[in-house]
Image (spheres, rainbow, N blue to C red):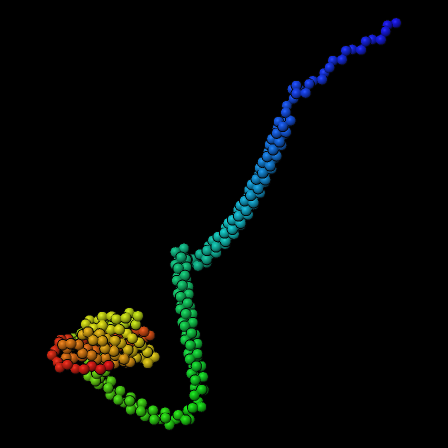
Length: 312
């Protein structure tokens, strides 16, 4: 009987610290972080691409739907146009068959109808404008009448006490009117000198020019234009009263400035120029707000005369 077998010899596998052939721990961690970042970036990039593809698909689908709808509408309009064209063609054919008229006659009739419609439209537009203007005039007149009515009501209480005074004023006014009428008939200027004939419009002024007795210059004077020269004199419009038809001007002649104040329309405004025996005259035949229109009448030639004073 044999004895116990000897135990196998154990090999010492312990490796001293620092002699193992393994990777450092920090390198493993860095590699893991890089891998995770790469996987995350790839995931988000892929997700972004998917979102963009979805958006592009949605836009394309919406565009296709819009184009389909537009094509459908265009198709419907084309169908309606074809139907309407067919109806019109049938009507034209029926009209030609019944009336026996040619295509040129149809075109002529259409043109005449269009011209008549245009005339009617223009006439209606003019009538509407005239009606609007007339309505504005009536409204303005009504407003003035209402103001006059209020003023009249306010003065009714004083009429009885003013009757005697009014009668006296009427007599005085009648006397003044008679004197004024006499002066107008004699065409007397503001210096009391017999005036040349007075032109009330351009036709009469043309007649005066044709006589050749005096020289005439027409003017259109605005207040904002200040001093303006007309021939040998200068004029400056100071004020106008369109309601009472009066005006005031300054005239500069021979280095003298003369004010002609509160002159009436068609009144010959007279002044003398150096070397002329007859007076120069200004006649205003239109007075507006800040504007007068008229003419200046100059003597033809210089004559020796005694100095004469002037008054406004």
